[in-house]
Length: 169
Image (cartoon, rainbow, N blue to C red; front, side, top):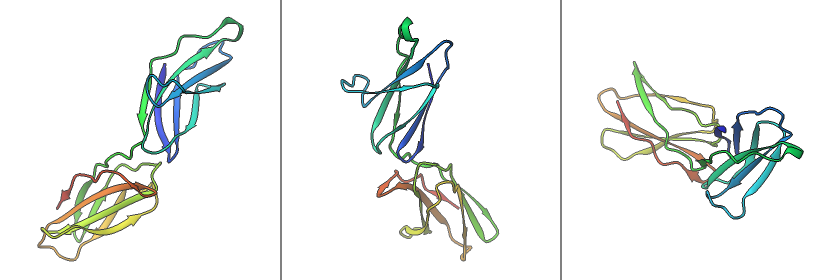
């Protein structure tokens, strides 16, 4: 059975499954639907595979063991993963003259764009973060008698994630 399917880079998914005894190789089936009539078949010698993918698609995977002259096992159950950039969950904390924004980083994105508004004004672009491992940003505030509102989105190339829910302090 497949134990893990993770989007690990902008154009790569890592698929991992339980290792079996006396296996010569594994066949990984990869399709764009559960019933793909033209799937990609990948033969590997270990219980994981890194496959190249495209942004904005849904991929389906199943695996079987190849026992050489003894034949092959049945395919595992199908697992799938979408390569759409997910919405980020943004949180904020205030400390003296700064607001710290935090989110779960995504290693496969190119970066993040943060937007801010004060009170009920329009949102403006605050900053772009180009390091995908980054998971926080400190905004030094200059007005203390107002409400600061923030949202964030991740990007890959020109593709943007949905904007996060707005947080206010």
